[in-house]
Length: 275
Image 1: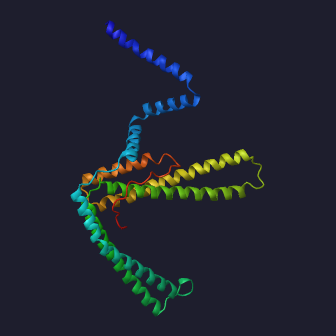
Image 2 (image 1 turned 120 degrees about the vertical axis):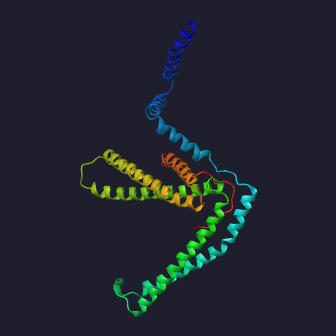
Image 3 (image 1 turned 60 degrees about the vertical axis):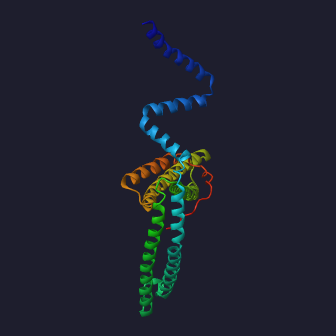
C-alpha cells in the first residue's frame, strides 16, 4: 500500500514541476506546447500518421539495390536507348505535321480544303506512330525498372522529383492567383473608404486561400501521377498499395509548410529516360 501511495503521488509532483517550468518559459513557447499537446490528445491517429509521413519524407531513401540487380538495371536501361531515339523522332515528326496541318487550315481554322485534309490524315498517322513509340519505350523502361523494385532508391528518387515538381506547380499557381487578386483588389478599392490595414488583411485571406487551393491541387496531382510511376516498376498488388500509401503519407505530411526548399539531391544515380 505504501508503494502504491508513493507511485500515485508521483504524478501530481511531476505536474507541479511542469507547471513551474511553463511559467518560466516565454508565452509563445507555452502556447506552442499547449497547442501541440491538445492536438496530439484530441487527434492521436492523424497526428501519428502525419509524424510517420514526415519521417518517411525526411529519412526514407529507398532500399539498396544489389550489385547484380543494379547491373541488370543499367544494362536494360542502356538497351532502351533505341526506343528512346525512336520516340524522339516520332515526337518531332508529329509536331512538324501538326504545324503543317494548322498552317493549311482556313481563316481562323474554319475551312479545310483537299490539301488540308491530306495533311490532317498524315498528322493522324504520325500520332498513331507516336503512340506506338511511346508504348514501346514504356515497356522497355518498365522492364528495366522491374529489376530494382518500387521500394528501391531509384523509385524513391523518382517519386521525390515528381513530388517537388507538383509542389512547385501548386506554389506557382498560388503566386499567380495572388498577383491577380492584388491587381483586381487594388482596382476595386478605388473610391472606397477602406483603410490600408483592412486592405492588407483582406489580401492576406486571399493569399491563404490561394495557397491552400494550390497545395491541395498539387497533392491530388502527385497522387494521380505517382500511381503511374508505381505501375511502371511492375510491382505486385500488395507492393503497389503499400507504395501508394507510403508516398501518399509522405506527400501529405510535407504539404504543411508553404515555403520550403527541396532537399539536396543524393549522389548521382543512373537516370531513367522520360516516359
